[in-house]
Length: 272
Image (tube, rainbow, N blue to C red; front, side):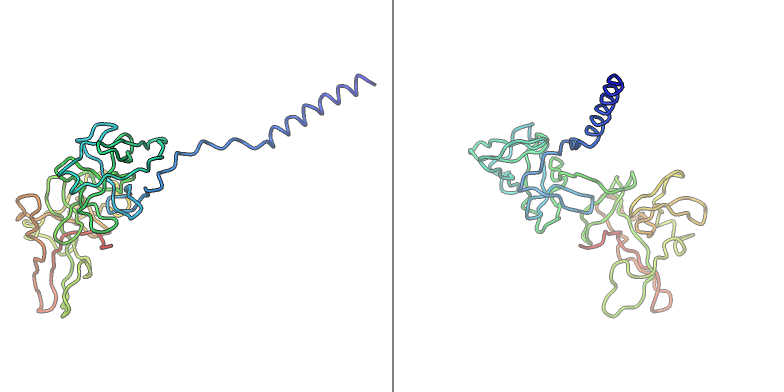
C-alpha cells in the first residue's frame, strides 16, 4: 500500500509541476529600442520617412562618415543638425554624435540626421536628392513600377520615367467657366488615344508578366499590349519632351464639339 501511495504521489507531483510550468507567463520578445522623443515617422508620397516632432523630414548625407558630421559653415545654412540632449543615450540603431562646436546630434544607423531649410511644411521632401548627396530617411516605400520615379514638377508632386520622361494622363475635357481642375474629367486614356495619337503619345509599357500593387495596376490595351496605370489612369509619355523636366504635353487640348474634347495633364499625386 505504501508503495502505491508513493507512486501516486510522485505522479501527482509531476502533473502539478507540468501544469505550473504551462501556466507560467512566457517571456515577451525583446522590444525594439524606442525612437528618440524628438523623432517620429511621417507618411509622404514615396512611403514613410523619419521626421522631427514638427513633421520636418530627416535626411542623411553621403559626405558624412559613420559616427561623424562634415556639415559646417555654409552647409549649416541649409541643413540643420537634429539636436540631441546632453544626457541622450544610444540605443539600437540610434546613436549620438559629438559635433565640433561641442553640441550633440542624433544619428540613425551611424549617419548624422538633419532637417532641410527648403522644406516649408511638414511632409515636404524637397531636400531628397539635393546635389545627389542628400537623402530622406525612408523607412517604408510605396510600390512603383521599376521604370517610374517621383519628382517635384511645376504642377505638383508628379511621376516620370527613371530616364526623365514626364508621365501624363488623358481626361475628357469639359467646359468649366471656373477653370479645369486636374484629373476631374472622365478617364478616357485607353479608348481615345489611338492611331495618329499614338505617334505623339506613347503608352508606358508594362511587361507581360507585370503585377501591379497599391495605386498601380496593369491594363490591357486594345492591341493586347500591357500598359501601366496610376489609380486606373493609363499613363503616357510625349515625344516632344526631349530632356528631363520637360512637360510639353501639359494642357494639350483638342476641342471636338466646342465644349468637350481631349485634355492631357501631367500625372500628379493627390495634393495633401
